[in-house]
Amino acid sequence: MSALADSVHFEVAELAAAMRLARSLSPRWMVSLEEHGAVSVITAVLRREPHDLALLLRTAEAWVEAESACAIRFEVDGHEYVLHAGGADWRRAPQAHFV
Image (cartoon, rainbow, N blue to C red):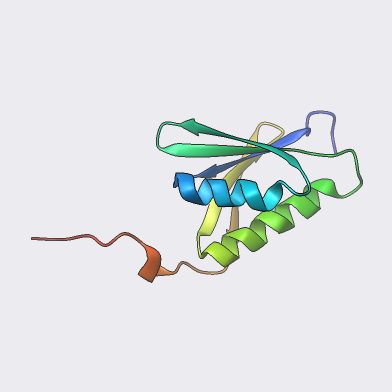
């Protein structure tokens, strides 16, 4: 882990889902949640333990799969990535009403 990698920022579109991610990470990491327009950002502070980043990303990946979210964006060391897991559950998506 480089000196810059002291936290990871996850973007989640729905506030309720962001709160669930923050809650799932909080037993192990110090987390904060901020709203930035239509996106909520969960910041998790990495611990100075070997493989902590990998453990954090695996925990987030399990959350993405359990939520059927398909993917979320995250940033570490100033670089943006997409974490994919499982598939989307379209039954949970908001329904469009076409005229």
